[in-house]
Length: 92
Image (cartoon, rainbow, N blue to C red):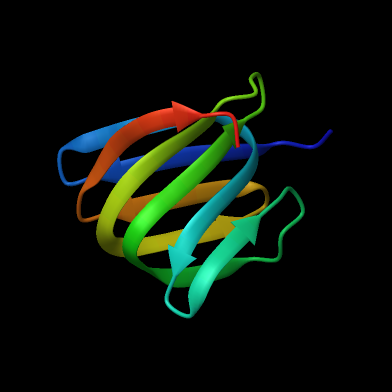
């Protein structure tokens, strides 16, 4: 299965980096699901929750974000948040 390279950073530095099967982010117009092969996009990041399904595990990693922006290009997802904090993991 194809994978995404994901970097999540905030004003304090790198929050998380790794490979993922799926990323869901609160875009300007609503939640956006990102899989490998997604068309390039640049979007405002609304306050909310980013969910990452890592390539090597079943537990979804969740981050509370306070705005910013994200980009997707060539299976590289970069999330630049004003603030990003980990939230408890889940299996959904």
